[in-house]
Figure 1: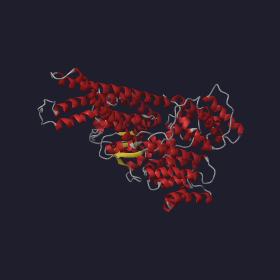
Figure 2: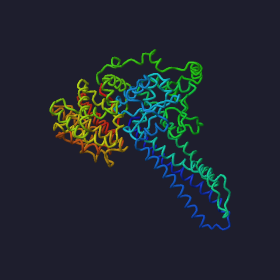
Figure 3: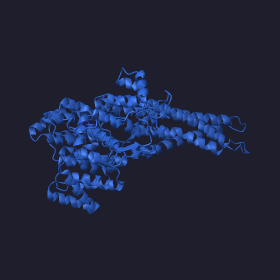
Figure 4: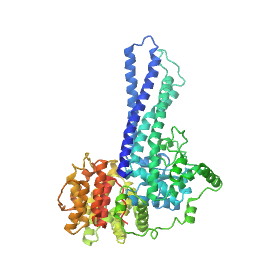
Length: 629
């Protein structure tokens, strides 16, 4: 199953979620109506018209309350939802420069996977008081995401196992499961809200009896609402179970494809089953996010289970594994639970990978297949790239105080006169201190390989997101001025500016930076031709070679058409392309990605400029793309 097919299935699941929500609301409304009408209909003074009026009022009140709670809860989580979910469970952000080796390892693994899939690095949290092994990713978009692991995951998992768990969570990030998870939280908040209101009415009216006009006592109303609320809880748990189980199998499969070894993921699952703490969470808010967790956070019956049985998840990856094998592990770990860092040392997993993953000849077929479907080669490349980023530069990227000047420093030109003009731009908007810091960052970046510039920006993104909204909007403006300071635009500057624009806008608004209308590939022909022409020119200085690359890509996008190659005048023509391709449907996006990759691979070589532009295209489409190795 390819990337766009997985996203289509997520959208289909979202439609089913709406249907299940409507059915649950109708059932709750019908039950509340029945109880109220049954209680009042026995009175001699009640007319049929009054019963109809009562039914309308009760139905309206129930529908309004459920809808309002669902909408408000979803809107609350739409902006910064990943961070809010993590903090609601007691999550603590990973510090910019952690001294704990477990937190360092956690950050490195996440950044390696993000670089390998060319996705924004999420904000990192951990649950310091949770001994169980668990993790989750939450957020409305990849640019809004947070990843959170328990202390048990940090303590008990070795690097391979932690890598498998994080790869599983990244599958949820790139495939759109996170947005579905946030919507599910909103839906469930509405249909379970009646139970909260019912308890309040029950306690408020518990000591009161019927008043003189023989009206229904408050405690009785509370009892009815509470009963309806528990019906909502019942339906809510069923909906979570129906939506979640199959997605966990898919995420497991994606994690194995990404890491190209099952032992990491199965090792984590075995430790969940073999250790006393399991994957349970102690937070009272656990049920709200149970469908988003790596392992079951609560002990539900099979009917309500949000995850497939643990032994089945293991057997899908390791068919010969039996419950007896799990019991043996449980007995062995009872007195001596595993230590993840100690296992790393014994297995040699803590070593730097720079020598272990050498650069290799690019295989066009493999690379094309890996777009949208990151593989083990992608991960090894991501780990190598992360290891090549100098530590002092990584420290600048992780620090919220230096993330903004670091982005500016990436754009600062090597020409002294241009750099001075850019310094003045930063000083005018932010002051001399920020301009000095940007100058210092630019000096640190001089020795950094050009291929590492976009990965450096990627790992700076979580710290960048932590700045105030007004400052981030100012950053968007300043980045544009810095790029235009020398009167010319190179590919790296344009790509960095576009990725910052997309990422920050999505982080600020939790939506696309463009109001894109739905497009077909046919209606988007002009924009697609402009994009493919740009890629063809970027990788080929010879006009004939550029024309050949253009025709190779066009033959994939429009196999029946004869379209002449018209070179673009400058890269800014792509500004009109992004809103159009962002509005393409899933199948058309898949075709476009294939056409773009075919154009780039026409000469079987990907230059740095081509890879940066390809990454930008896939960034706009939210499609993972492997780094060039």
